[in-house]
Image (cartoon, rainbow, N blue to C red; front, side, top):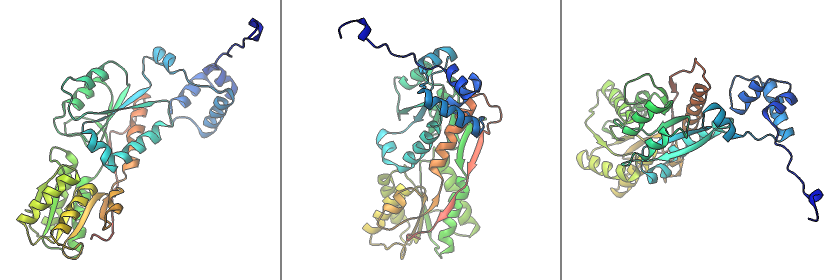
Length: 341
């Protein structure tokens, strides 16, 4: 550079008002589009997005946060062990759905995976105002973290919460799902049917067990073949061994997740029991684990990715001040038949 005339100054960044003028809409409408509000017509959405692209407008998150006293971020709280979270395809599907919805907004996702929080770091983080709301999945009865978070900011739960209250949540009818999975084993002629449950401090586990009991009771079959695990394959291995030791004439197992069902299959192979010849197996989730095992699993499908999308959508609508956001959101399940039953 030889002089000041050679120095090129950066052009001023386009503003929200300039985008509004280009699109021939109000500033408030542009703000709704930028924040992913569903209350924008398709034509207006197209016009605003075209103006944003033409002007190369980038929202100033820091300025918007100062002006609105919001952070532009939401938290995903998972009170589980990190290895468990990253090893279960159910969580991957939920997160995929959440991010698919957040991609339509300007919100960022902060992931907080914490099975224990002795220093209350997570609660201090939430209290500091760095997120505007939170999504909670895989919650357990008596979790201090979710209870404290619920007093600090808006929450949407993935799964029916265990604590009483008028909560926002997305779930499936786990009682019906457990009954459908068990009923299939009854329908294919199995008489000595057991179940491997998830942790009984989680509503989903309790409900799936209730569904098993409901179907077995209606068929006049015994309901004593029950063992509890922890939604891991290793936990299901130990539970299935206990079950077979206690009920050697078992000819069917309803397992409360696909990951656990893969553990059950390995024990049946270890004991020389053929599937489905000697023992028929039904899982729950219809996750990639159901089709990646040596014997493809018959399973109860729950729409995990769509559940994540709906959770994020509910929270964004709530944060936008909508007053008609439904609190109790139940999505459908259905049986997927494969080789294991």
